[in-house]
Amino acid sequence: MVGARDANEVFKENAKKFDTPDHLKEKKKQHTRDRAEEDFMKEFEIPVESVPVPSKGLVYPISSSLHSLETVDITCMTAKDENILTSRALIRKGTVLDTLLKSCLVDKTINVPNMLVGDRNALMIAIRITGYGSDYSIAVDCTSCSEQIQETFNLSELPIKRLKIEPIEQFTNQFSFTLPRLNKEVIFKFMTGQDEIELTKTFERARKINDIESVVTTQLVNSILSISGITDKGKISRMVPNMPAIDSLALRNFIEENEPGIEMKSFVTCNNCGWDGEVDIPIGVEFFWPK
Ligand SMILES: [Zn+2]
Image (cartoon, rainbow, N blue to C red; front, top):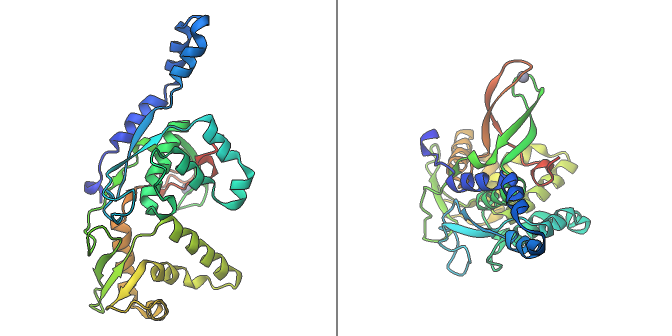
């Protein structure tokens, strides 16, 4: 899919601006002492940045603040936002990131949990760049020898995957795919942040009763809205495990290839065994809490 990748220009601009704190320091030195406070406030007037919305807002209904939006404005991360990141109450409730995203969005009417996972990721990465720069250091596992590879990724260079397929109806999160073996039409949706939270809960319950085999099917059942016109969730969840593997794989590949978002992948080389290849960049604790 290399040909389909767009350069991530907006993030790049951000990176240039935010990776040069020395500039700010130099400028500050030039000011005389009596004007220092006034200048301080001026200098720290929070800049607003424009972030691309990978879905181009094409999946949100007219009632949504994201309807038809190709970009969304954020204010850069401030010390106040760092308070959110260290709030024990928010961490316990699991709402830290939603609260942070909401705090940085200029339009407060945007419903963060209803955003597609990919749109939300674009926002999260842009906010991270404004706060701590574009260098992201994290360890990934080598695919070949399982040794940990410590790598610094440049978040501003991750390609944007914009929505390229049309919903079955304008401004809905509903897309069509025909299963190659069964020759039946499936209508599916792309996951929202809220869907992902519910899916994680389902997985946790499954893990407790040692039912790990259902991971693939649970994910599919969550994405599928109908099979051959059947919309009943109970029926869909009985049909999916019996779907031919070739159909299940084709559907999952189609969803993954077309899901709008930020391509969280990069090439790495393992110093231990010499393996090189593409790995998924995980969003770990270091993302918003860099060491
Ligand atoms: Zn290795």
